[in-house]
Amino acid sequence: MTTAPPPTRVQQQARLDAAYAVCRGIAAEHGKSYFLATRLLTPDRRAAIHALYAAARVADDIVDVGADQPGRDPEGELLAWSKAALEEVEAGWSDDPVRLALVHTYRRYDIPMEHLVDFLAAMTSDLDVTGYADLAALDRYMWGSASVIGLQVLPVLGTAPGVAREEAAPHAIALGEAFQLTNFLRDVAEDVDRGRVYLPADLMAAHGVTREQLAAKRHSPGFAELMREMVAVTRRRYDDAAPGTPMLARESRDCVRAATALYGGILTEIERADHRVLDRRVRVSKPRRLAVFARRLAAAQVARVGSRPARDT
Picture (spheres, rainbow, N blue to C red):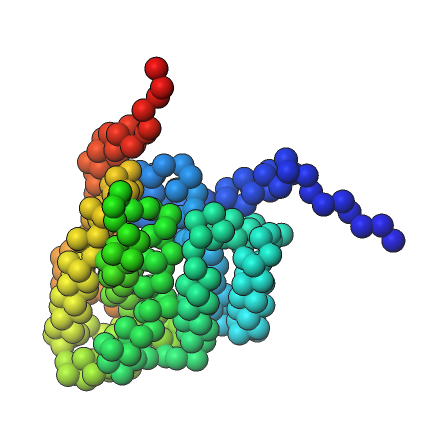
């Protein structure tokens, strides 16, 4: 029995390019606001962010198949995917396109492996945990589902000269949590359909909101008050994140500013809808997304030029 020869360097690069293209397609399809903001990054950083997004999306989708596709085994599928991802980051290669781009990104930017471990642990908890007693419990979950996402992205974005990664890390964590909380508030109806509630149970009780009400998609003054309180919590996380943007590499700042404006805009749309997220999906309109992108584009181009090393003459 003969074995196939190992791929040549040219073949490896072709597979890697194809893997990043797959991740780009996933990001473009499922993360329209994020994807638009990444267009403000340099090409190498953009591809790495697409890889991180796609890996997170694939793992999250595995968890959700249990609710959407009866007969599947999300626990077994997630375990197999997680085991493969961790082993492949160590080995330096994968035959799966999303994991290959993830492996390359992790190794290229020296992202600590524990971030991937913590993220996968959070995804695993989604298989069994259906609610959170209070904001502190939700924060513990968000360490793996959101905080470490910010920490994964930080090495890719880079920091300004003289700024240590550790100095910017708390703000990256806060931004990851702000984005995650925004998702939770927008997707209450979708999440409850899958048996999960990411609103603190003690705050729900304080406003007279029940899981049964959420499942029935019944809006009420109490639900509006609950959402108003959670919007305020989320905005404070954005405030905590804001000092971190100037700490980033100059050519990465406009991407973060755009993503923050677009995702922060979801909170504004929730308010404009009188917090009615149970019977509709609020979103930032395409013209609004394009306007945010256009405002940041010129600044991003100037930043790229300013960050280029001077040529010898």
